Image (cartoon, rainbow, N blue to C red; front, top):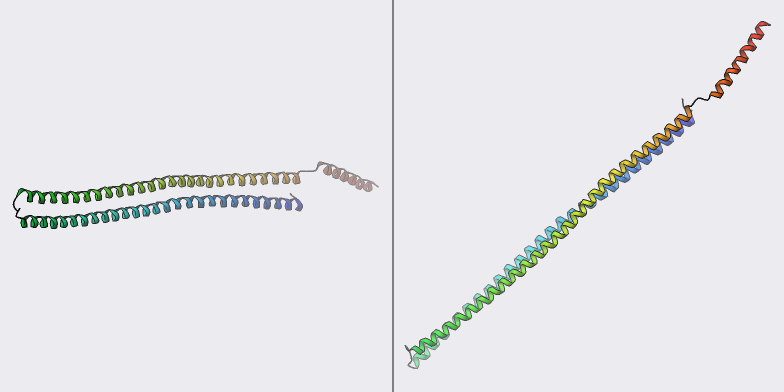
Length: 227
C-alpha cells in the first residue's frame, strides 16, 4: 500500500497530466474551429461574388437594351422626318413642274422618282447605321458580361480551393490534437506507474533485521524461564 506522500505525488501527477491533455484538446479544437470559420468565409465570398456578378451583368444587359432601343427610336424618327421631307419636296417639285407647263412629261416623273429614290436611300442609310450601332452595343455588352463571368469563375475556383485547404487544416488540427492528448495521457500513466511501483516495492533488509531481533527476544525469554 502506498504511503500518503506517494499518494499525493500520484494525485499531483494525475491532475497535471489531465490538465495538460485538456489544454491540448482545447487548443486543437479552437484551431480546428478557426479553420472551419475561415472555410465558411471563403464560401460566403464565393456566393457574394456570384450574386454581385449577376447584378452587374443584368445592369449591363439593361443598359444594352436601353441604348439599342434609344438608337432605333432615333433612327425611326429620322426616317420619318426624311420621308416627310421627301414627300414635301416631291410635291413642291411636281407643283413647280406643273406651273412651268411640264406636267406629265418624262422630265417631271424623273425628277419625282429621283427625289423619292434619294429619300429612300437616306432612310435606308439611317436604318443601316442604327442597326450597325445596335449590333456594336450588343457585342460590347456580350464581351463585358463574358469578362465578368470568367473573372467570377476564376475567383470562385480560387476561393473554393482555399476553403478546401482550410477544411483539411481543420481536420489535421483535430488529428494532431488527439495524438498529443493520447501521448500526454500515456506518458502520465507511465510516470505514475513507475512512481507507484517504487513506492510499493518490499525492503528485504528491514525484514531480516526484524527477524533476528525477534529471535534474540525469544531466547531471552527462554533464559529467564529456565532460571
